[in-house]
Image (cartoon, one colour):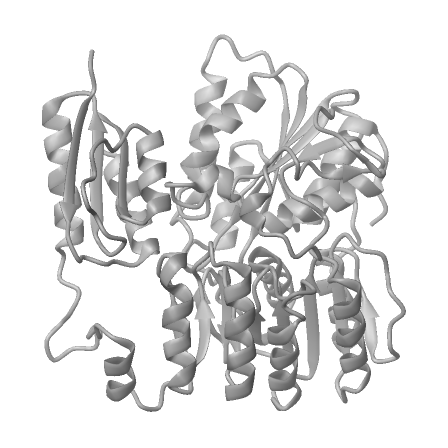
Length: 523
């Protein structure tokens, strides 16, 4: 049967990319719909939709125009899907005499709220710097959620922002907490004496939620973007964030999280820490321990970062790490297949497999100091270095499903975890798979019930008569019980489905290593 394609264009109709991802996901889930996309008509998006078979002739569309496209199994399904898209797009976005007023320009927003001091920019990358520049020239700090921003534009913006005394968080900054208020993908945390500067979103989430779950609150978590510690950018936002936290009375202990910075940037950051009156804990994930000043502690993983700070402030750490006897060697000789929605959680898994001398491949790199554009680096060339040798056909595999090659034209797996379904099926249908290793990341902005989506995917595989794998499924849940999804509820759902749930991502990885090798990793 031939599929039915329906497409609609709305001229000069700009909408936020996160909202469009959610609308696309809602339409795509309707009966009879094979694929759906609601996207701004940027050149990159047009190419993505054409490659997906969702777009034919586009005429003279501009980047500020909107494309709605649906491919369905029959005409009625296509018509119903287009009606649903229109319903979502046309839903009222303002409330008269209420609190839901939405300004059309940054200038009108500042006029309406003159006391505001931060702007969140979430527009296509081609427009992000221009909007961010407007914000800093209005005296606002800015969080740039947008990605695909050219490196040279980031450098120029951050130099100007520093001159104006404004902090730029991003580009590609997905997580921040300011005065206990979560922005974008973040969690409901206890407030307390710890603050975080992070070049990674899920890294901030993992550390902050581990602290909060163990009774230690967080005042601020300032994301700086994944390229801020590259040599070309020079750590501008990182240093400004450190200055802000240095003068913040609520911040008693500061955490710094990133992949290894460029050497010259690392030295200037450590020199700045040495001049600080406050204690620091540093995690350069995947890097060697540098020479540290006396007021700085070192951690090699995200969980170690949280536990080091707990020890420093409270004099206690969580219960001793123990691997269940039933896991040791239970899948010996088989493979670990890691499917992650959090890029930094995938990186942490790479670090731990490298430390265990296990050969693996991944689409993430343990190096963050190159100044090359991330978009120019293919999945193949980013296969992770294991034991000093690049391996493209290694035994174990760790995939960041939130990377560009998996999310072009699609929602991020934290928004729509069904993106992982096909990869789960492939892993469980592979007789060499001993452990399926997954992360569940909850909080504001994330899917309402990602554990149930994963369980449905696993059950669908188990019901198949062709399923050859008896893989052990190990998960971690990044979040707190106060999050909208409730971490404990997610854990209960997973455990009731016979999924082994670890207290942290690194513990889950260590469980996996022990299961396939019968080796007890260092805790």
